[in-house]
Length: 485
Image (cartoon, rainbow, N blue to C red; front, side, top):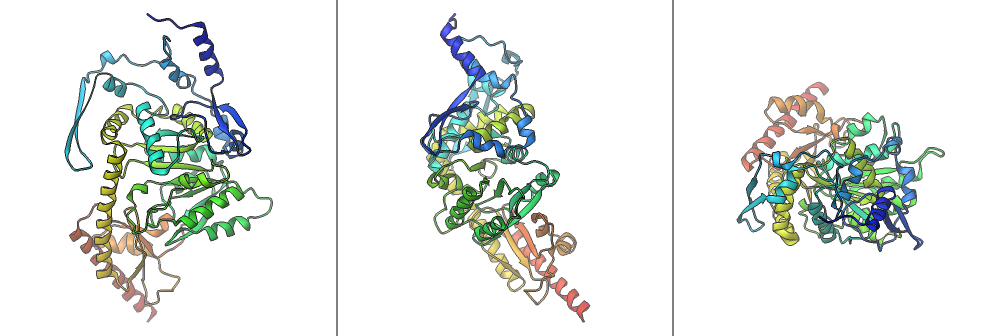
């Protein structure tokens, strides 16, 4: 049996007490900064913000969070020659599972049979790293290289989560104190509003339009910020196929937002579950994560991806990519809450993705985006058929939602269009469900807008649903006319 040498002991002690990673700052100076292993990293080549720059962004809760005394040492178990008495892992000999076989479609729509057995299965059934299954993390790091042009060693890392929502929540807890102001594009994904409401945040709405987030609105807000009042430290945005509006931000808007992030020193939370569901006619704009390579220094984008829309929603796997200090804060939260993403689901996903390769993955996602484009076209045909003159909308370029304004009176410019009552009552009475736009506005103000999903329904169901909404609008108009009369 091999034994560990005194030299290895010295290295382990140094790693244990002072784990480091090298970063290059905007002045060209390199610095070894504290780090826990996140993804596959080598010395960065981009100029990046120094680790100490992020101190001002962390919430009191994040500053008080301490590393897990067990999980922060688990990576040392892989050191050759070491004997680990560390973790309370169950003995895999007691597990009843001996193999797992599943079938899947290839990107070419051919049936594949994949099998987990032996050490692969044992690893999938056991506790694993907080950061994620190493093979999957490495594969996804390569995916970020392939999709966004960010190379290993450019001062960023990656960590897995139980869906992107899990990671977004942990990032918010790490970056926001109760009562803080935060910048939110508006309308905004309804799932994040409760996060900020719970913290009693001041939710500062940034306008959006058919070209995505309005950089003019953002600049106006920041340049007119009250003197002496701390500015927001984060901006939350969904840049492709925004939920609920379906809008995709143009490259000009993204570049301006990045400039504002540098000028006013805030972080961009780039929530991007619909990145691979882009089906617009123009080339897909680069992500914020990609565009920041052209900035004088990188490190202001924390990106969230999800496999829910392209592999499986129930498998609950997402990943965050960005500056190491921010990922470390997320991982400390994970280590004391849910420990890790289920290793078995990660093993299954890695088996599938590894069999496809990156080109196969992109073929699959192109097929998925083409599927949703056809769904969008069906929905828009139904909109034209039943709601022409009764609603206003812009055609989405990504995602799975239509955002349209109901014209509940003859005057389309009237300020009193309010979809809340007609959608929650009249539409339900007529047998159709959709979401009133007010739930996507942090202020909860009235709006005539409605969000409808077109991901599941058949063409026949879509046409029937919008026919029913047509009658709801006509009924509302008749009732308003009768009241006015």
